[in-house]
Image (cartoon, rainbow, N blue to C red):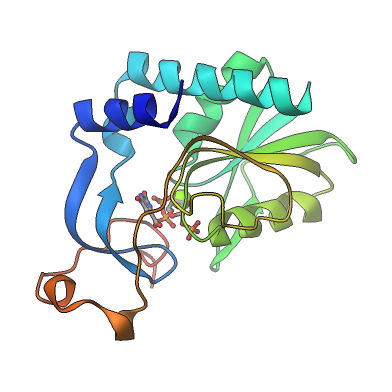
Length: 194
Ligand SMILES: O=P(O)(O)OC[C@H]1O[C@H](OP(=O)(O)OP(=O)(O)O)[C@H](O)[C@@H]1O
Ligand SMILES: O=C(O)c1cc(=O)[nH]c(=O)[nH]1
Ligand SMILES: [Mg+2]
């Protein structure tokens, strides 16, 4: 499955949104990939995550566990883990910081693949990887359905992306006028509890 195939799944699901969005990183973008509209369709989610699992196995071999950052990473993390035939867990924010909760744990040195839905700056991936390492896991790779940085994001381990593309994103004080003119949506969960 190549980038165009993945984007077609997003288009067909009505998940390729245009407007004015504030992203998890605080950057603003005229494009948002509303992944939940993709993952809500079991067959579509399975096609994408099966392909991602195959890419992970081809690049890093077998792993022991897949761990994702909540909320967006939970469904693709579970489905990818299913195809890798490994346990699936997630980290969630406690006082703003990602932690393994709900009885989830890793054995010291277990090989972990961190599975994200979307990577933009890589900040959430780095936070998730730090939480896994703090819990004793050895993160051998990160994986995502779409890398919006076109390969530029550095998450500190190899990043395996099913689709890779560069999408414009701007700091709040450097918005193009046509973007600044539109009302802003904040669709993610990072700022929900504040
Ligand atoms: O690479 P980054 O710059 O960190 O951006 C990508 C992150 O943004 C979204 O999460 P968000 O925090 O918006 O919440 P969600 O998982 O609940 O959608 C997405 O699920 C990634 O985790
Ligand atoms: O950077 C983000 O927060 C982000 C971008 C995107 O296209 N989709 C998403 O769910 N999050
Ligand atoms: Mg997320």
